[in-house]
Image 1 (spheres, rainbow, N blue to C red):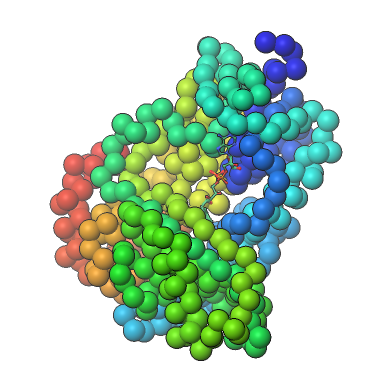
Image 2 (tube, rainbow, N blue to C red):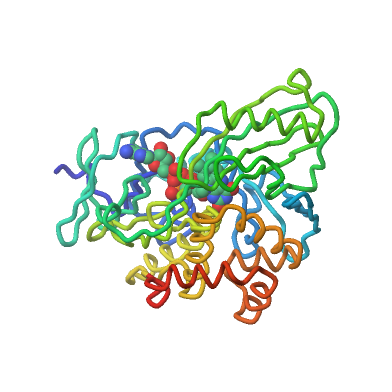
Length: 392
Ligand SMILES: Cc1cc2nc3c(=O)[nH]c(=O)nc-3n(C[C@H](O)[C@H](O)[C@H](O)COP(=O)(O)OP(=O)(O)OC[C@H]3O[C@@H](n4cnc5c(N)ncnc54)[C@H](O)[C@@H]3O)c2cc1C
């Protein structure tokens, strides 16, 4: 192996997780001088993902934010609930803007190398990790990877496995129809044909919005099914015929929602990060702020030359709640929608967001659960008891 192929740190995958880790490394006076290799099959920034989050007070994200909403709406069982947020703000970042800003900054650092390559495997021999690609092998003492499923992925225990899958259209309309201060987090007042289904609406101005048809289910649909539902929704809720709007871009995705326990290490010295590191919250699909929090932990450990913490991303209590809710989402569509209805009708939105961000106290959680139908939760505890006792 020649010297040019040896680095201190390799970041394999330049998506949300890889770029976020790179961003914190660039902001670390200790680490920014290390020899770093960033690998991805393509570095071309694309605005094909809109990352939203609400718990960013402690994170340096303001410079990336594209739009924010102070008010949220949720619809279910024929009703809808609106609320202005008090402690939070619902923010969004476009992935293309994020990648461009981070890659442009990184290009000013001499010791960072960018290689477009297809990553095929990782291996390790005691102190050195090896990344195998179609452009050759690269080695480093630390590799962070967000591209390949860990080797034990297929054999790890999983009882409930869903996908949060969606297709979205960003549209521009002739007239002013949207409220750019209010996002629709979930509107379940749509046909529930193929799984728990809702519409997600992010208005960027009075006449431009992203409208996403989203499902929690185990089977992806044909593209025209999602698009037909968006067309119907625009017609029924906004009286918008197809001649009255233009589709500016499309977004699609399938985010895993599973009670699988992800392993921290792909192999020795190769750490799994991002979705591959199990950072996606199983019951919501939100991952972005967890990626930031994990990157901060990694950088802090690398700066001190300490072992990177391997703590589970969620505490035992929240892993159990996720298992229970995931069981209900997988097994009882009607009750799931009713739970969302009661949750948003009977609790403040700020409290629900705090709960989803796993920052509530046990007494907050007891008070939230007391507003929900309790029999389905008892059933879920019974069905998931083999894992609830261990939290694994
Ligand atoms: C459309 C969409 C919208 C989302 N919205 C939200 C949201 O609003 N809020 C939220 O918190 N989460 C959201 N998520 C979930 C999650 O935050 C994202 O999926 C996020 O991009 C995960 O980051 P990652 O780095 O793990 O994966 P990615 O961002 O997908 O990055 C993986 C990188 O690896 C590269 N790669 C893959 N295979 C190879 C290979 N063999 N060789 C070389 N390179 C390879 C890819 O090119 C990519 O750049 C969304 C996901 C999707 C798909």
